[in-house]
Image (tube, helix red, strand yellow):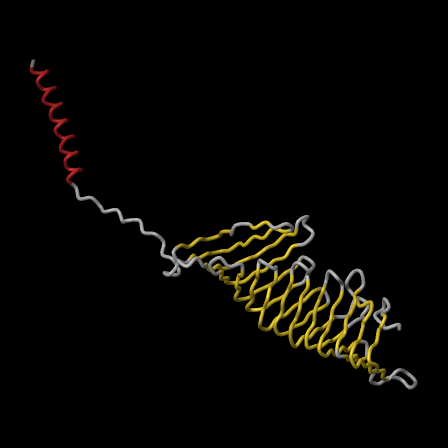
Length: 281
């Protein structure tokens, strides 16, 4: 009988200790859990912020257009800012691609024009590269427009100017003012050329380059000047096949040998070039 009582007392003591432990745990002060705070937006005026995204792909009859960005800010008026923005178009069939990048972009409400600022680069799949600090891309007509200084290059040609438009649908680059071009010699050391012109148009697909409102071309020891000129390129687009000069055309060869051509002038001239880069006719 005494053994039974001792066991009951022991069980009651264990239960009492367990109950006391539970009560003590419940009465212990709780450590407050810090509330979850949303990440602060980098611009308090923005209503939303998105990172690493892509705007809706727009599909036209011949090409697809996508806009990727590192960061996007959306504003109450429907406008948006994009950072580390990249616009890419792919022509149907994969024959050509066209990319525009910039540090920052801005699009107004229901607008098709994207304004780009900071290290803007235009790169076409044929190797053409254009650089400027400020430009716009208009999705309605496929034009990139830049009002300020630009630098451009493709293959052996590089140059600069003030203001440009690039029509990606026709693959035509227009430098609007103060165009300066330098063409490096080919692998045989021929064809090195320096050109200045008030304005120039490069039509790569149609293989011609047009110089307007005064042009001066220095190549191979001769100087060519005219009011306007059009250079038609060979099939590979790497050298001049024919050069048409208009409006007070003039060719001078400083230091020409005795009996050699020293100068030639006329209202218009048409020069045909051979594979060595020298005029034949």
